[in-house]
Length: 204
Image 1 (cartoon, helix red, strand yellow):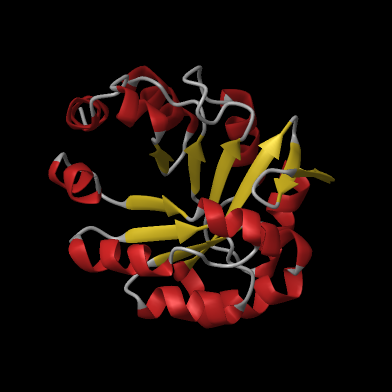
Image 2 (cartoon, one colour; image 1 turned 30 degrees about the vertical axis):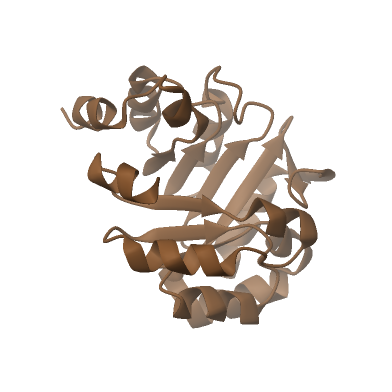
């Protein structure tokens, strides 16, 4: 599948270790490393990354960007240290439900507001954020345009949007809002989005 998306024009592959997200540690490093070695486009990986050692292992395996989620909420001091060490190669994912941050593979909800958290991450030196409305992820409905717009306005950082993206129209709207990029998942596998066509349309 990685090679297929690359052949259709994907400029980056977004990989999530779902087993790792639930377990709190990387569980699929071997296949992630194989994907990173097999493709020419850069990869970014999230899920179960809770410490510096996990980041090191992924970067040595050929992954270009590593994504922190739960660890960024629970260990802000670690985020600051990682930002100094890894710079642009570190991304923080904001997984949101009802305007508040969710952690541990989306199973736990916090009282932390997404915008407040985003600003805190920016102060720690984070260079890029991913915003996912977990209530819409995989639903084939539409993205949380309002939540994305609030985040774009709140912080002067590149934002990548995810969750509920089902058509090229959604991608165009997100572009108008001001995101840097978008992550498409289920819609590619169901055929709701033709990747090659979608890239052509948003590039016009």
